[in-house]
Length: 471
Image 1 (spheres, helix red, strand yellow):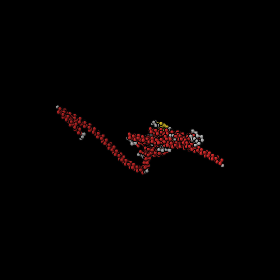
Image 2: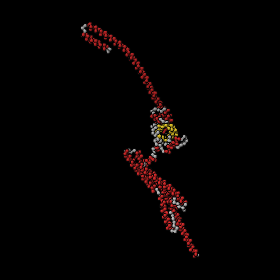
Image 3: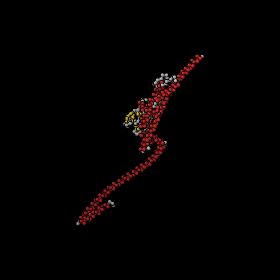
Image 4: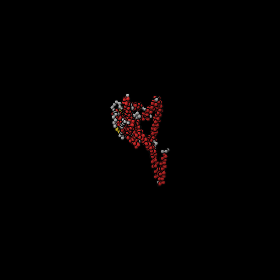
């Protein structure tokens, strides 16, 4: 019915056209002729449409049958896959249970492996041995982050790297490698490594740079003694040789090289420090000169003691003895005069024997005071710096206080040695003065005793001669 509806519409349109033509036509024959022609055209068009419809109907039936067949095959395939999926789910659950049963305590073991790998990663990253065997920390890091169970090869390598780290820590080895110079340029050199503690090259100490995985030359090298030891270590071909070991694996060495030298400490003392050093140097030179002078005087005095009867003027004792003159005619009065002359001669020698001691005592007293002045000035500068920067960093305050204390150290550094030196000089001079007093007084006493014995023998002799005639 739907297919015939267009045909009916076409027939109606044809009738309308015929009717319109009929009104225009003047003959019934023409109208009949036109109607017959319209029916023939309509019959031919209907036959063609029916033929096409029948052909398409057969084609649609074939397509429907094909679609139904494909649907049946797909449904069968779906049922097959669903059954296989259900079976796979059951098998997977069974295998998981079996894996859990067989795994047992290995789960905890693998957890420990990951923990050990994580801890070892940081150790190997900072290890000096990694300069010779690089990229070990990357393996440890990847193993620590892995979600899957580690393989046998990974477990064996984990054990091997840990074993190698331990064994290499007890070896002194030489190997060729690239180091970073102080200016940042690379250089291929021979490196001597002492376990995981220290590395030297060309008489210079190296530190490990974990960020680039290579060794670098320290910007500041330690003392000449330590660098000499490093040179001897690298030059040695075998046997035993002295070497420096840093048990902290570079921490102590970095602190040692950052320690300021004596000149740097003196420079931190600024102007007051130089004044203290100048006073100390002058006092030290004067004390050294006086020490040699007193030693020479003591040797001359000892030589004079060996020949006391022949005084010489090249020593204080000889000059003092030369000033002693006793008048045999008036011994008592002469003794008083001689004693005064001895005191005068001794007093004349004392200034030369005790010279510079007053200046040394002054330097001993002034050194700590100058150091205190420098400390106060340094503290004022430190507090001003803290106020200007507005920072409460303990490092800034510690550094400023350390610089301020340099002046105190310098003051005490010259005061303490000069105190002992001054005591030694005073003792040496007192010994010489005591010898002068003892020898001069002894000679005076001996001379007076001889004088008195002579007078006594004369008196006793004269009495005997007068008594003889009476007898």
